Image 1 (cartoon, rainbow, N blue to C red):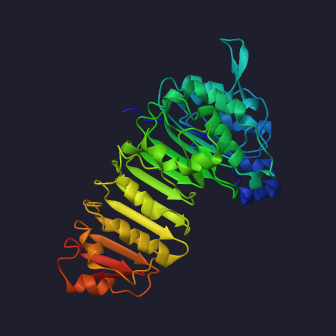
Image 2 (image 1 turned 60 degrees about the vertical axis):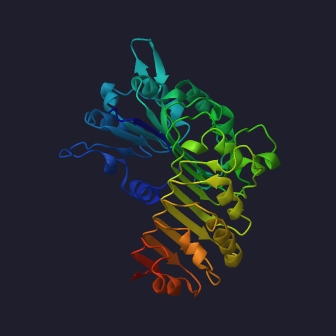
Image 3 (image 1 turned 180 degrees about the vertical axis):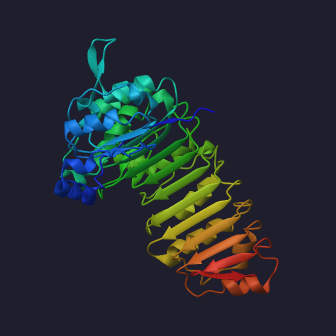
Length: 390
């Protein structure tokens, strides 16, 4: 099995205390000592060129390199980089400013081009990460970088993107409709409080793990925002939803479905479902009745407000026949089970573990203890951190 390379492009500044110590102690604080043994990784931030050159001279065994903002200078790097498997560039400027001297082509190449060329045909795990508040709220042009990624998108094994809205839209416009034959893991986070961007990755036949946070996942990015919002889950179902095994949705907009009577409900292979930080406008009942999930084994739902309305929708969805025949574990936060019925428990024949957090007093526990036929496989449950056994 080939271990995927990891090309990480980060811009979140998380080393402010270390940089402050560096400024106080001077550049010599970062020079390798005589007893220094190079480890499997290296992180470099805010160093002058002469310090970098000395570090590279002693970094023969380094397999990972990270450059921080402030080192955007052109300097030659030796052939030791062929051992690297993980490279993190802390500033978009470094993607072009750090260059390799090439005797073969008699010209210098950028670090990104050199890494991609030396990675051969291996699968790639790519991380796009940028946070405006830590970069003085400067808008970075990601277009040249995304267009360069088009050439190797057929090698993407996993994509992790945590960027503001404008960068997410640019990512979708450039890469959204490309073919990703190897893409298995997709993690999208819009790290601002603006309207969720509409992002599409419809040509990913191997996609099985999806994590969405403040993102509208749709099939056609050219649609209007209103239409894209109304059909986001229906569009997911068409290209990739039937192959997704794990789905996590955090702070997503309200899904509004337009059911297709020919393929309704949609049968999907989902095994793990997490709905976190949902507000009262989330169409929970419509979500559960649109998709048939016979293989679902774990469900976790966290509601932020309007407990009674949210819980009533969930109960109405659960009493539908054969909704969750394989569900083994469940965790519910901020629910109201004041009007729970035995039908709710009959719909969970394989449930083994139940976790309740911030739950209002309800007859649920009394029902489970009084009638052994309700959730017959349940052997333990936790309520507000207290473990209870049946």
